Image (cartoon, rainbow, N blue to C red; front, side, top):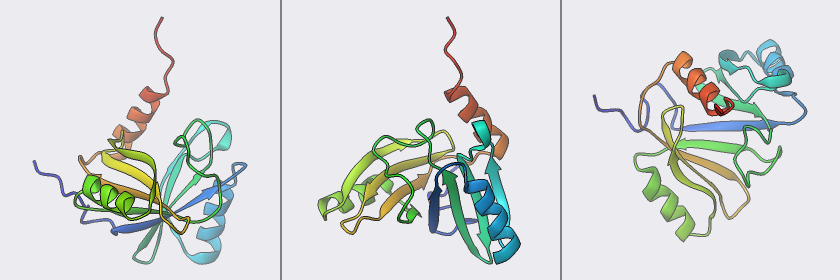
Length: 156
């Protein structure tokens, strides 16, 4: 079955907010209580940390997460400017074009456990972009299981 590289049920551009000191859960509660957000997904992490959550505001979607060495990509800046998650038909070509036009690569495109092919870069203005193409459609249980198996201790 062919998989749509830009999911029909997802906006093409998704803001991603980073939090420190496990404040993501409190922010989610605040956005729901005071801004009318709806929780779409919240993955539990160790010690109250949130490695990934998604909220919906009307027809807009946001991603949120706590910054953590365990779940962050090497070279990724800490909390600060907004991070943007943009779906593209061809993430490799989009990534290459951005690099050729002044962006700095953080992570070249690679297949991720949640089903997207993802590359991360910083644009010339300091904003972080996660560029993605959807390779496979997974349910929440499959994504969580893949995440757990990635961080499971190796058998001796």
